[in-house]
Length: 253
Image 1 (cartoon, helix red, strand yellow):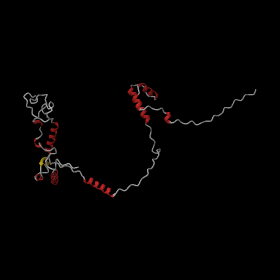
Image 2 (cartoon, rainbow, N blue to C red):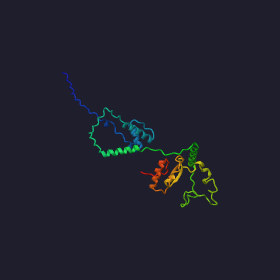
Image 3 (cartoon, one colour):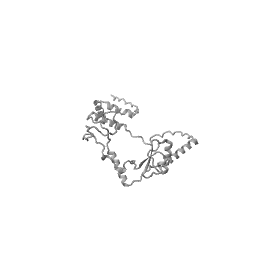
Image 4 (cartoon, one colour):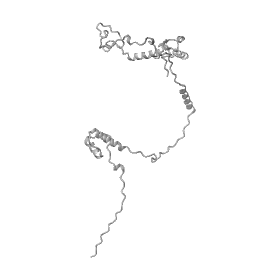
């Protein structure tokens, strides 16, 4: 018998298989909010799915997953060459400012340049006076606040110091569990007593005539409270001419 011919295999046409998008290939990662709200069973399942260690407590699993998600989220930025060039914006012709605005700008710039900071006048002190002033400042910092006896008990009492007069007063008799009374040990050096913190001797001034005999190296002016604005301006101008420092200069804005 003649040999039976085997049927020829029909060739199938090859069709190109479309590549899966990267977003579909990668599984959707859980968000940080979902990781924080998930329970231990879900956390263990996620760590097992992504090949992470499943040992540890819930906080450790959450930290592990959050670190993994953060690393996945960080993708390398495309190089500057690969980035498309941004579209060019249409440049509009600049409108010329009117001459009045330019003049105002120039005036403001000149005012700023003219306002040069002038340092405050300082007294001429020797080394001994400077040492005593620093010693007084240290004493003031260490001195406690002396309050009236039982200032906390009655609302009508203020914080102002009053000497305790009661016969049975524990504060007057210096009992150890009471606070200290004002005493001579809290005072500062006598040579700098009553001076301004800068070292000037304060002189109260009511009118311009009192400025004639003042020494600008040792004395400073404090204008009295009752002096009006007009006379205060005159006193301040006279002090500037004589080089005297005004401790309570009028504030003008």
